Every structure is written in C-alpha cells, then in structure tokens.
Length: 283
DNA sequence: ATGGGGGCCTGCCGGC
DNA sequence: TGCCGGCAGGCCCCCA
Image (cartoon, rainbow, N blue to C red; front, side, top):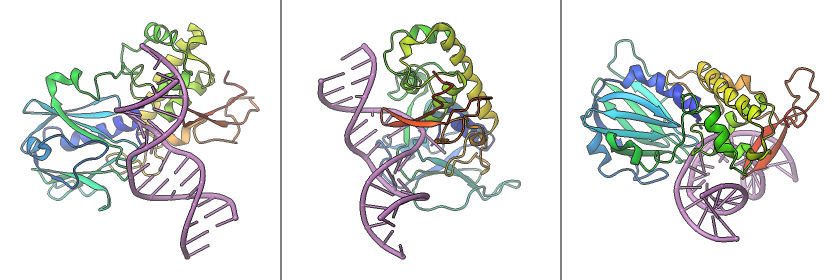
C-alpha cells in the first residue's frame, strides 16, 4: 500500500496516540507475515514505553524505553487500526475488523493498535536501537529524499553509472529511499522524463530537475495526507486526497494534463510493474 | 556488480 | 450467478 508519504501520514497520526505511552501486552495471532516475527516479540514489547515514533524510508520505527526499536513495514496492504475504550476525548476511529488482524498492541491507557494486513507482505522486527545501521531491512537503504544527503551531486554521480531505466533507478531503495510506483511515475512526469530512459543517458540538468520534483511531489503528497487507493486511511480514519492530483498514475488512455499537450497517457511494463507516462511530453 | 524476472499473498474487477 | 485471468501502493532472492 504505502509509499513514503502514506507512511509519514500514518506516523504523524500515530504520534499523539502512542508517543509516551506504554504497551501493556501484545496479542500475536500468527507466527509471521512476510517473515517470521522476531523471537519473543510479545514479551520484548510488553511494559515498554514508546519514546519516539520515527520513519526511515517506508518503515515506521518506534523507539522503546528499554533500548530496542520496533520496526513495522506495511507492505502492500498493511494498515494500523486505532481503537480505544478509556480516553475521554477518544473514540474508535476504525470499524472493527477481524479477518487479517495479525498483531494487536494494547496500551496501558486503553488505546489499542491493530496491525491488519490481508496480503501479509508486511514486516515486523525488533532491533537494538544503537544497531540500527546493522538491521537487515535498513542496512542498505539509501538517503531520505527529503533530507540533505539526497542532492544534485549525489544523484548525478549515482545515476551516471546506472544502465537501468530511470524508473527502476527511482524504485531502487538503495539509491533513494521511500519512492514507490506512484511517486516514481509522478516525479518523472513533472520532470518531463520518460520512465524508459536509461539513467546514465540523462543530462545533469534534467537529473537536477528530477531531484527537485521528487522532493516537491512527496511534500505535496504528505500535505494531502497521502494517496488513498483502495482503503488507505490516515490514522484518524480519514482518506488521504493526493490521488486526485495524479497526473499520470492510473490514468491510462486519459488526456495528458500538460497545457497544450495533446498526448494520451500510456501504460508500459517495466520489471513486471506498470509505468504510466505521456509519450508526447516525457522524453 | 547489476539488472531483470519470479515469487510471496489476498482481494477485487471485468469479461465470458 | 460463477469462474477465471489479470492486476494491485513492496521487496527479497536467484540467475545470467
């Protein structure tokens, strides 16, 4: 489901709910999602207080008072449902689900978080906070696209040695963190670059433009509360609305939105995934 | 070393 | 109405 803006939206919504709160107990309804759950998961989490809720790429990271960090990845279909019974101002924000509720976190203040994930591509892990750089999921993740490390120099240097298409380069989490199919397509549209162009063939000027557009499209999407396809929800249960701003994603056969462009959006397959673009104005 | 394809899962939608 | 194929926001693994 979620790319960087959706995960960031979830994080921002969860902060007031869980930060500073103590996990009372954890109900684990199956042994694994995509990968086996970490050893003694429920035991290691219970009675731990969440000090900070962070995000790295598409991963949510909850730092715990005892020196470990809980890592959660939502995969394609993962959701974190919030419910609560004891908070004065707090009501249940999501309908009660049942199917695919794999892990339930009960907090001592009465709040309950439920990890629901039909396709089970999600991930949960626990690692020593100080050893984040050694974690198998985070180890090779590239720079954050909204951070200072991801700049024109870095991206030009990286792209010039890559013979893969620019679309596949944007999806490579070792090169830049957090982009998925939607925001890769949308940034390429804004930069007027075809997703099929080999990264190493693109001029520095265009790559610089692409860096800027990656940033702005992600920032706009975060401001909009992410994109709601199928059932992505913000933590408060509301839909994100960035999907209304898509220029190309999911718009096959529809007219290009560029002023005076007569093109129609096409869909092509790259490495088994759909890319959407306007062949007339993206070269 | 890098790039591409397969596979992991369930749900939904369109066509017959 | 029901069945089947295709597709879906991700990412690890394997092979050339």
